[in-house]
Image (cartoon, rainbow, N blue to C red):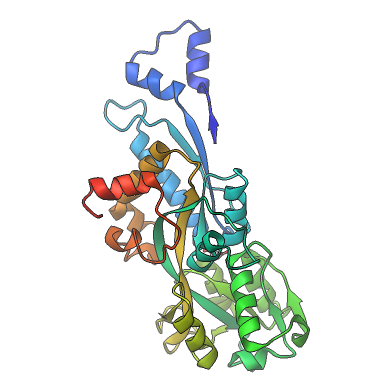
Length: 332
Ligand code: GLU
């Protein structure tokens, strides 16, 4: 996080101008820059991060007579995804990030070598559900995990949540990388085009519903989403608090003629205990006081409910700044 004298204050001082409103001067001198790690530009995490920034800036309202003069400036760049975001928060390079509930759990508990073990990881709120999708080519003949043997399958880029969750599924099924004809590491933005271009036969993707990246494949070249609800998935769901069964309703995409049942996680918004209570309070407040606006910015956010967001899918402790907001609102 970068703190310092804002450019506005510096320029005004150099020009010998008096800043008219005391609040403006105060806010400018306390300007705080925060960054939120997201995912690929065609995914939903990118929209989550940029929605939160938009609401933070809306609330700031410097230059207006009313508004919260918190001085926070926010950016939400595209990143590799969940485990990348957590690693960068641990390294102090990002202040916040969006991450799958399974990777939040494993990071805090140190229960997986696929994510940085970070005891200072803190939960802020959860966002939308993310079913794990296996999306396959129209004529690939793939209808189950077993059918992926000998096929070209995109396991995802390192740093993405789906890469980790795909590896968990591979272990649960006893599938080795060599069982695929090709195990590619394409990003979420590359994979749908690769499928439609016939370069891969399928890909695994943990993502909110609906989303533009998946639609490129389902609506663009008739790709199908297969069911994943057998014994292996039942065991994963019953043994792990961060997994649940999920349905992708029929009609979501052009090729989803029937409901698809799979398992999934929650998208969660996380930070570090080292980020100040004041900053986390203001960011939480901006997102949740404006929940009606939040819901409108992506169809996957339609059902967001603060009462559930403050607990569903969260396994790391709540950050004190977020807890302060929930207590003030009588939610805790
Ligand atoms: N769940 C994916 C990940 O953790 C990202 C999905 C998205 O970008 O919406 O990498």
